[in-house]
Image (tube, rainbow, N blue to C red; front, side, top):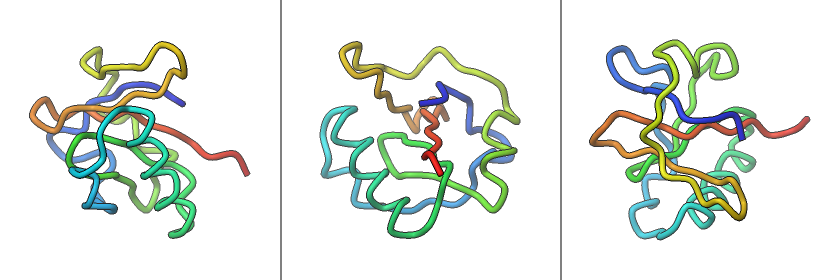
Length: 97
């Protein structure tokens, strides 16, 4: 995990994927869902909020363009988190090569 960041204004990660995330409950399950989708699509850097998984053409360089946020709930046992679309926050992950 990389941390919690703002995804408002011009979106730092503008490309949604995995729109079925609304049926997934809990930070760990949301992370696993987006991770699986990201791996299938070849994305190395992605963000998670309660509406979608997010990425972009230069995600590894742009995810922090709008600054850090403190509004992502995190599961303390695993460190997995998610943002809330209403706040425009995403929890960002980078997959190892």
